Length: 251
Image (cartoon, rainbow, N blue to C red):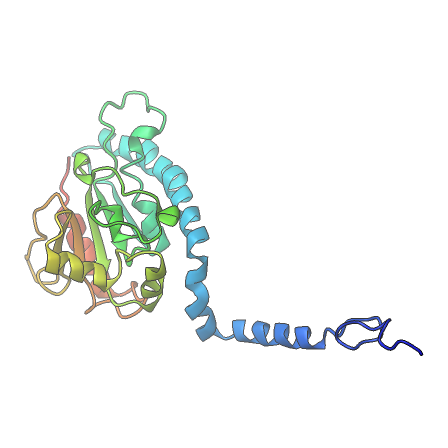
């Protein structure tokens, strides 16, 4: 009796596998990834890799520019104008390292005061609130690592805007992002020692209203002036940054 199927593949083909189903599935995935809405929802999956890229850029490239070029220049100029570093999202993550890495870089001839920048301002920063709050454990420390060194050991003022943000909300798979409004609410409601809180419209947006005098990390409720993750290029945000910079006087 002739044995049937001896030369057939498991899918019933005659020696050549049928890839039509696989190709169809691949086509559907490719089509879905062309949809911006799908990409936005899945973008957080790349967070671990992109976050480490931002950390590397911040610890080396940005920190070198700030601490070995701008800070020495500041100290040579009349009245020592402040050095201000501003970043958005992962750019704010990169900027956040500049004070902490100042003393790890090669010495600058003639520089005795290795102090880092005067102000670091982050707009919707994509790194965990636990970076500054050692009382909170990271969800996944293998992604983020331990909290930073005590920020009060540096003269840098840290200020971060917080707003409702679907992209940062997705990042909660890894940690609560400092630029998410939930970080502000937790700091406000639980009086987290590392943070001081205020609202962008009150007092920062009012004429002559001061930023709180504090050496804590300032979290700013910016939901009234920031409506989306890239909604940072508007006049009100500009005035907020100008207000923050005006509170950092000559050293």
